Length: 202
Image 1 (cartoon, one colour):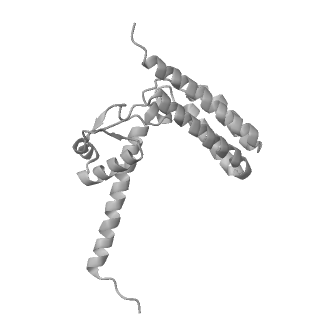
Image 2: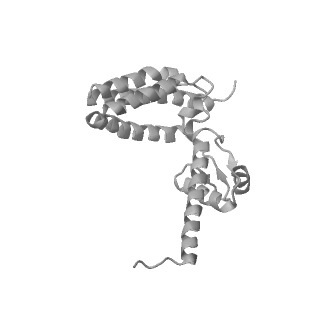
Image 3: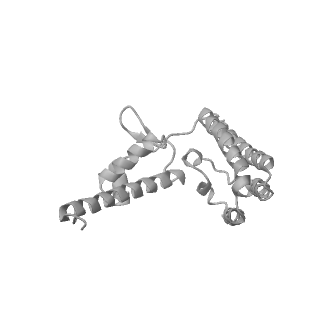
Protein backbone atom coordinates (compact mmCIF):
# COMPACT_ATOMS: atom_id res chain seq x y z
CA UNK A 1 0.00 0.00 0.00
CA UNK A 2 1.34 3.41 -0.91
CA UNK A 3 2.28 5.64 1.98
CA UNK A 4 -0.15 8.49 2.50
CA UNK A 5 1.20 11.97 2.05
CA UNK A 6 0.91 14.06 5.20
CA UNK A 7 -1.30 17.11 5.16
CA UNK A 8 1.53 19.52 6.00
CA UNK A 9 3.78 18.17 3.25
CA UNK A 10 0.94 18.32 0.72
CA UNK A 11 0.07 21.91 1.53
CA UNK A 12 3.73 22.95 1.31
CA UNK A 13 4.09 21.38 -2.14
CA UNK A 14 1.00 23.12 -3.49
CA UNK A 15 2.11 26.51 -2.16
CA UNK A 16 5.56 26.10 -3.72
CA UNK A 17 4.02 25.48 -7.14
CA UNK A 18 1.80 28.53 -6.78
CA UNK A 19 4.75 30.79 -5.90
CA UNK A 20 6.77 29.49 -8.83
CA UNK A 21 3.84 30.08 -11.18
CA UNK A 22 3.42 33.65 -9.94
CA UNK A 23 7.14 34.37 -10.34
CA UNK A 24 7.06 33.04 -13.89
CA UNK A 25 3.94 35.04 -14.70
CA UNK A 26 5.49 38.29 -13.45
CA UNK A 27 8.70 37.54 -15.33
CA UNK A 28 6.81 36.91 -18.58
CA UNK A 29 4.73 40.05 -18.11
CA UNK A 30 7.75 42.27 -17.54
CA UNK A 31 9.64 40.67 -20.41
CA UNK A 32 6.67 41.26 -22.73
CA UNK A 33 6.42 44.89 -21.62
CA UNK A 34 10.11 45.41 -22.36
CA UNK A 35 9.91 43.69 -25.74
CA UNK A 36 6.79 45.59 -26.82
CA UNK A 37 8.17 49.00 -25.88
CA UNK A 38 6.21 49.38 -22.66
CA UNK A 39 9.31 50.98 -21.12
CA UNK A 40 11.43 53.59 -22.86
CA UNK A 41 15.19 52.99 -23.19
CA UNK A 42 16.92 54.53 -20.18
CA UNK A 43 13.79 54.36 -18.03
CA UNK A 44 14.36 53.49 -14.37
CA UNK A 45 12.27 50.64 -12.97
CA UNK A 46 11.44 50.43 -9.27
CA UNK A 47 10.24 47.33 -7.46
CA UNK A 48 7.45 49.10 -5.63
CA UNK A 49 5.99 50.79 -8.71
CA UNK A 50 6.10 47.55 -10.71
CA UNK A 51 4.55 45.57 -7.87
CA UNK A 52 1.73 48.09 -7.60
CA UNK A 53 1.14 48.08 -11.35
CA UNK A 54 1.08 44.27 -11.48
CA UNK A 55 -0.87 43.99 -8.19
CA UNK A 56 1.62 41.58 -6.65
CA UNK A 57 4.06 41.62 -3.74
CA UNK A 58 7.67 42.74 -4.06
CA UNK A 59 9.08 39.19 -4.02
CA UNK A 60 8.03 37.99 -7.52
CA UNK A 61 9.00 41.37 -8.99
CA UNK A 62 12.43 41.16 -7.37
CA UNK A 63 12.86 37.64 -8.77
CA UNK A 64 11.79 38.73 -12.27
CA UNK A 65 14.10 41.75 -12.21
CA UNK A 66 17.01 39.54 -11.20
CA UNK A 67 16.34 37.15 -14.08
CA UNK A 68 16.02 39.97 -16.60
CA UNK A 69 19.25 41.60 -15.39
CA UNK A 70 21.03 38.25 -15.74
CA UNK A 71 19.69 38.00 -19.31
CA UNK A 72 20.85 41.60 -19.97
CA UNK A 73 17.32 42.66 -20.84
CA UNK A 74 17.68 45.11 -17.95
CA UNK A 75 20.77 46.79 -16.56
CA UNK A 76 21.67 47.30 -12.91
CA UNK A 77 23.77 50.40 -12.28
CA UNK A 78 26.47 50.65 -9.58
CA UNK A 79 24.00 52.56 -7.39
CA UNK A 80 21.62 49.55 -7.63
CA UNK A 81 19.15 51.37 -9.86
CA UNK A 82 17.64 49.18 -12.59
CA UNK A 83 17.13 50.68 -16.03
CA UNK A 84 16.09 49.61 -19.51
CA UNK A 85 19.36 49.64 -21.46
CA UNK A 86 19.78 51.72 -24.58
CA UNK A 87 21.12 50.03 -27.68
CA UNK A 88 24.44 51.15 -29.11
CA UNK A 89 25.44 50.81 -32.75
CA UNK A 90 28.23 48.40 -31.81
CA UNK A 91 25.82 46.36 -29.73
CA UNK A 92 23.33 46.26 -32.55
CA UNK A 93 25.96 45.14 -35.06
CA UNK A 94 26.95 42.32 -32.72
CA UNK A 95 23.34 41.20 -32.49
CA UNK A 96 23.04 41.35 -36.27
CA UNK A 97 26.12 39.17 -36.79
CA UNK A 98 24.79 36.54 -34.41
CA UNK A 99 21.31 36.61 -35.95
CA UNK A 100 22.65 36.21 -39.49
CA UNK A 101 24.74 33.21 -38.47
CA UNK A 102 22.10 31.46 -36.40
CA UNK A 103 18.95 32.35 -38.29
CA UNK A 104 20.54 31.77 -41.68
CA UNK A 105 21.55 28.28 -40.58
CA UNK A 106 18.11 27.70 -39.06
CA UNK A 107 16.42 28.68 -42.32
CA UNK A 108 18.64 26.30 -44.28
CA UNK A 109 18.00 23.43 -41.88
CA UNK A 110 14.27 24.14 -41.85
CA UNK A 111 14.13 23.26 -45.54
CA UNK A 112 14.90 19.66 -44.59
CA UNK A 113 12.28 19.38 -41.89
CA UNK A 114 9.42 21.84 -42.36
CA UNK A 115 6.03 20.30 -43.13
CA UNK A 116 3.16 21.58 -45.23
CA UNK A 117 1.36 22.47 -42.01
CA UNK A 118 4.42 24.49 -40.98
CA UNK A 119 4.44 26.35 -44.28
CA UNK A 120 0.72 27.07 -43.97
CA UNK A 121 1.24 28.39 -40.44
CA UNK A 122 4.00 30.72 -41.63
CA UNK A 123 1.72 32.04 -44.35
CA UNK A 124 -1.03 32.71 -41.81
CA UNK A 125 1.36 34.58 -39.52
CA UNK A 126 2.65 36.56 -42.48
CA UNK A 127 -0.87 37.62 -43.41
CA UNK A 128 -1.49 38.74 -39.83
CA UNK A 129 1.74 40.76 -39.79
CA UNK A 130 0.87 42.50 -43.05
CA UNK A 131 -2.58 43.35 -41.71
CA UNK A 132 -1.23 45.34 -38.77
CA UNK A 133 -1.50 49.08 -39.17
CA UNK A 134 1.31 51.61 -39.21
CA UNK A 135 0.50 52.55 -35.61
CA UNK A 136 1.66 49.15 -34.29
CA UNK A 137 5.38 48.92 -35.13
CA UNK A 138 6.40 48.01 -31.60
CA UNK A 139 4.77 44.62 -31.92
CA UNK A 140 7.68 43.63 -34.19
CA UNK A 141 10.62 44.65 -32.08
CA UNK A 142 12.41 43.73 -28.91
CA UNK A 143 13.31 46.38 -26.35
CA UNK A 144 16.44 47.36 -28.30
CA UNK A 145 14.34 48.69 -31.16
CA UNK A 146 11.42 50.21 -29.28
CA UNK A 147 12.53 53.78 -30.00
CA UNK A 148 12.75 53.19 -33.77
CA UNK A 149 9.79 55.01 -35.36
CA UNK A 150 9.67 53.17 -38.69
CA UNK A 151 6.98 50.70 -39.61
CA UNK A 152 8.81 47.86 -41.37
CA UNK A 153 5.80 45.58 -41.83
CA UNK A 154 5.00 46.49 -45.42
CA UNK A 155 8.64 46.96 -46.41
CA UNK A 156 9.60 43.55 -45.06
CA UNK A 157 6.71 41.71 -46.67
CA UNK A 158 8.56 40.95 -49.89
CA UNK A 159 11.52 39.57 -47.97
CA UNK A 160 9.25 37.33 -45.93
CA UNK A 161 7.56 36.14 -49.10
CA UNK A 162 10.96 35.09 -50.48
CA UNK A 163 11.83 33.23 -47.30
CA UNK A 164 8.56 31.31 -47.32
CA UNK A 165 8.89 30.53 -51.02
CA UNK A 166 12.39 29.15 -50.49
CA UNK A 167 11.19 26.99 -47.60
CA UNK A 168 8.30 25.72 -49.69
CA UNK A 169 10.72 24.85 -52.51
CA UNK A 170 13.09 23.12 -50.05
CA UNK A 171 15.89 25.33 -51.36
CA UNK A 172 18.30 25.67 -48.43
CA UNK A 173 20.67 28.04 -50.23
CA UNK A 174 17.85 30.36 -51.26
CA UNK A 175 16.30 30.24 -47.79
CA UNK A 176 19.59 31.22 -46.16
CA UNK A 177 20.16 34.02 -48.68
CA UNK A 178 16.60 35.36 -48.34
CA UNK A 179 16.81 35.36 -44.56
CA UNK A 180 20.20 37.09 -44.54
CA UNK A 181 19.04 39.67 -47.09
CA UNK A 182 15.92 40.40 -45.05
CA UNK A 183 17.97 40.91 -41.88
CA UNK A 184 20.52 43.11 -43.63
CA UNK A 185 17.95 45.40 -45.25
CA UNK A 186 15.95 45.86 -42.08
CA UNK A 187 19.00 46.37 -39.91
CA UNK A 188 20.51 48.91 -42.31
CA UNK A 189 17.42 51.07 -41.80
CA UNK A 190 17.69 50.72 -38.04
CA UNK A 191 21.39 51.59 -38.04
CA UNK A 192 20.68 54.70 -40.13
CA UNK A 193 18.05 55.73 -37.57
CA UNK A 194 20.41 55.11 -34.67
CA UNK A 195 23.11 57.20 -36.35
CA UNK A 196 20.63 59.97 -37.10
CA UNK A 197 19.42 60.01 -33.50
CA UNK A 198 22.97 60.68 -32.32
CA UNK A 199 23.51 63.64 -34.64
CA UNK A 200 23.35 67.06 -32.96
CA UNK A 201 20.32 69.17 -33.78
CA UNK A 202 20.91 71.94 -36.29
